[in-house]
Length: 313
Image (cartoon, rainbow, N blue to C red; front, top):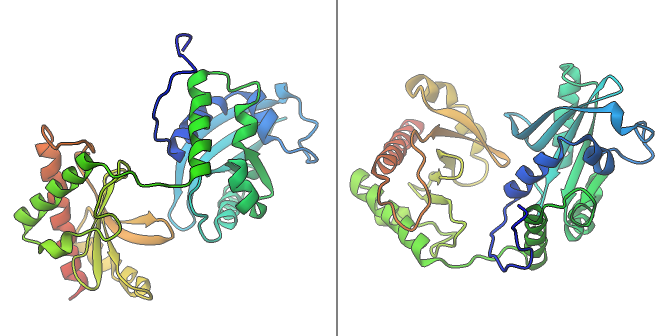
């Protein structure tokens, strides 16, 4: 890292996951935890850094009923196990009751004796915290970490700088001709191999693709939508329209008995049926060299079409 030129102009499209992974490397340092994640005027305010031991740092921890934690850090403070539950935001929309669900996950850990206590934190740019942070008792600003004494690596500081820049400008889709062609090819292959009408291949949210396009929606019929999520490695079926989730989920036992590889997947606030893609498809300007991954993807789309047919019986 000594050869990094901090003045170099580099285009980086930063996602929250990038900030998560960067932060995890610093969260193993008790001094960093002490500086930013031990609240003032709390029962831990007199803790000495030598009394803090980092036991585990985990990313994207899923709980089927209560959602996902971006980062969880299990500490030992003076012999007491304490869990840090961290929600990282750049500019994403706040999910309904998100702080409350973090607290419920923490309460469950305490009940299960995973830890004895815990603290829920929002980590975000000042702009986001000023607009949405009042629902979190404890908050850490990107700016404080970027300008502090711990994150000195030029690349890591640049990650925070780009994240702050994204926060200021907001989300902006930049059309990418190569990515548009990539998804068009995938759509045509699915249409050819499975005989789906072209109208049902249209993704109404992004007919022109940007370089963040890692989903494709197939409007299979009036009741269901198939969603290909390359970033998660899944193909999922979602009910279309409000008020259909309960009836949809009530059929899971029937579906799982016939399709052993279909499982329930958390998708934002929804729970959907999905299958994992055996071979992950890399999002690139071309699918050349990825024929096996394309075939695997098409096979999973075919499975989810069969699932829809059973749901409609």
